[in-house]
Structures are given as structure tokens and as C-alpha cells.
Length: 162
Image 1: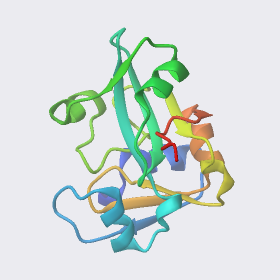
Image 2: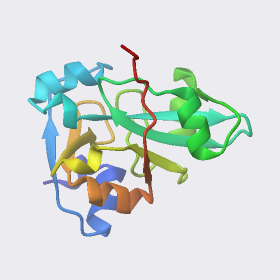
Image 3: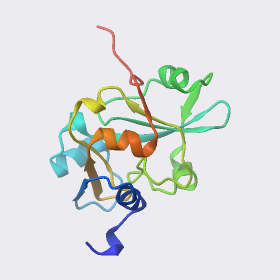
Image 4: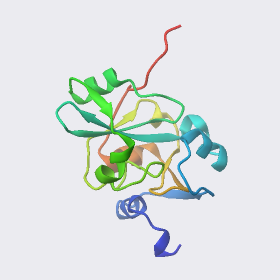
């Protein structure tokens, strides 16, 4: 693989001696995670999206949750010890993370932020995350993702009551 294809995320995985696979797909603009999984053939339940939230304190947090789920803002705030959190506006994603919408990954942001990965992700042998640019995904072992991002796992998705 040529150097030009390496993203910060891949360099971090390489540095930490993490085994991963790269999945590239044709895409020039943002598409949501469900469409990405459809294009790549990645199982929806093992495909994760990266969300950046900002707490009332001003601190940024990274939440990695299944692509078909929504973050529960109250649960997320409680998990990180904030009174409240809100999603980072799309126009601020690049300035805060260094990544564009659709290419945001929990690996290699401009600064390391506290990271939370949805409980249950570690139940799989492999999970799929953004590779750090639009048109690229990475598959890796979830335990490696937790280790490299110094994440903790918690239940932070919205649950519907029957």
C-alpha cells in the first residue's frame, strides 16, 4: 500500500501494532453509515459511527455507537460526568477533530478526547469504523479499538420502551 493512502487512523494502528483491514468504496460526498455498510457489505450491527459531543463544561467527548442507533444524550452526559451534552454542529467537526463529516474516526483526532464505545461492541470479533476519510472504512478487533483510544464502554444509545 502506498503512503498516500495512509490516514492518521492507520498510522496510529500501525504504531500500536494493531491488525486491521481497509475497505475502500466509491463515494465522493458524505453518506450515512447504513449506506456505507450496504456499499461495503459490512454487517450493520458491527458497523460503528463516531459522534463528537460537547459537554456543558466545554469539554469534547467522542462516542462510538452502532450506525443504526441514536445516542441517548442523558445517558451520555451521565457517563462522562456532565450535566448535559449536545452533538457538535456539523460545521465545527473539521475544526475540532481534523476530520470531515463522513470520515470522522475515533483514532487520530487533532487532540485526544475522552472516548466511550457502546456496550456490546466487544461482543464481536470485528467492528467497522471510518478509516479517516470518505470512501474508506477499517475493520478491526473491538478490544484493540478500546485499547488504542483509551475508551471505556457504556450503554449510551437510546432505547425505545415497548
